[in-house]
Length: 350
Image 1 (spheres, rainbow, N blue to C red):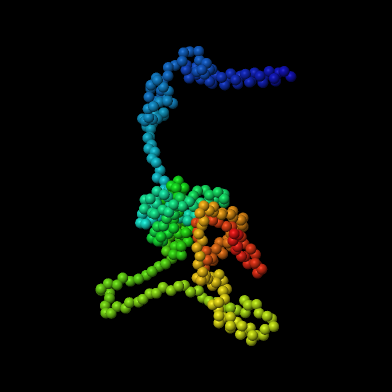
Image 2: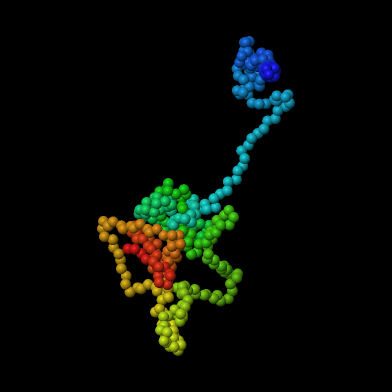
């Protein structure tokens, strides 16, 4: 039973001896040990690259030139910086304020046009000092920064201009460019913009075509046409029977006479806020008392659907001339109230 065990031990010892005999010493070139355990004196340091005895090959300062390790001629390679084409941001635009070119950025999420103080000084703008809170993503109660004033200037981007446009002046560190172009400029009736490939195209919605008349093209009597501008008139939709609450006992002839009478005096019946219009019989000025503290209420929480509905109603009010944009520190919340017919009514909670 002990014979196989002894044979196995002898085989293992033989293998260890054979592995040890293959180890070579870098110092004396002998076998059976490494240079760390070599009994002979250590060989002097020598670089295999340049032949110096002050360093080894790994620390050689000389460049790798001449022949390679196998005796063949070496090759030298030159590494150049790659030419990387960085795509420009299509929303970065050159903005002209009163014919002064500035760096700009189109921001459809910004509600106003913001201008750095240094840019306003460069353009010679007359700044009206005023502290205006500016809110971003985050708290709806604490503004992220405040504008330091207001001004007006002619704003031109890609040939599309808006004269005497309202601007808000902010600290230079508040925005990354000279001018941050927001919705007050982008949503002007004559401004149009769209994305095409890697380019943001801004163009005007109003196109005027004409012919330049010269002495060569004009002959005989010239005809001068007078152009007049009229106020926009919206079509008046007549009143129909299903819009009037008529007693069921009224016969067809009576209904017809009633509708005829209503449409004869159609101008006194308003079917929308736009038709309701405004009165000029009374004007008033609200004067703020001295040392008054502005009343600013927190906005009510609303769903995305209600926010879209509120925006639609406010836009209708703006078009009708009932309300306008304001930078007043006074603010009251609004809420939607359900009407009996299922529609929504916007109420201001004063």
